[in-house]
Image 1: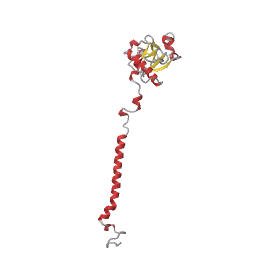
Image 2: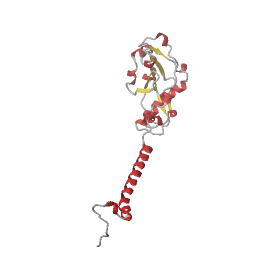
Image 3: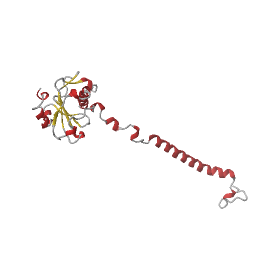
Image 4: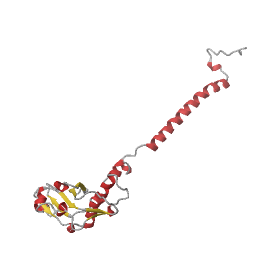
Amino acid sequence: MEVPAGVDYAGDRSARPVGLLGTREFPLIAVVAAFLVAVLLGAGIGFATADRGSGSGGGNGTADAPAPQLSPVQRAAPWETQRVPGTANQLQVTAEPDPVALRLALQWTVSDEIKKAGGPATITADMVTVKGGMLYFGAVEGTSAATDEYWAIGRIEVKGMATPPADPHVWRRLGSAPWAIVAHGVGACEKIPTALLSVWKGQPAPCAA
């Protein structure tokens, strides 16, 4: 092949034909452009999928939060101005701001327990009844309102369930925390504080029924 006069490919790049220069450097420009597109695309995907933090209101924390029905409003403790930690007090459900809400909280704990134990997922708190005349309610004074212990003892029925959780049921609430089942069935009443048993002059009726 004959080499055109005046062109030295080894030492004189400035002498290259314009067409040859554009053909050889175009792939480099394409690579750089593709790289920039990839970077921008990656940044966009990262922003779209980034964790927005707890302020978004999502996540397991919300899903696992106790139901508000478990924490009904309760009246101010009568002993607040003359607190004696360890002292037991018999209370009246009817003296609470919303007696129905208190019973619903106890019913809710039972329906939750049934579902967690593998029972029907269709069970609701409205299907649970705390038997009338079989609910004892009391409290043991703590060092502050947050450490007051509220106790409830009763027996339950569950609509459409032949074998509901065994009675008696013993519930407890610490301060304004949610109500929870402490124990149920044989031996449950052994969890009741001695101070309350003294006020009630022995185990209450639901324990013996």
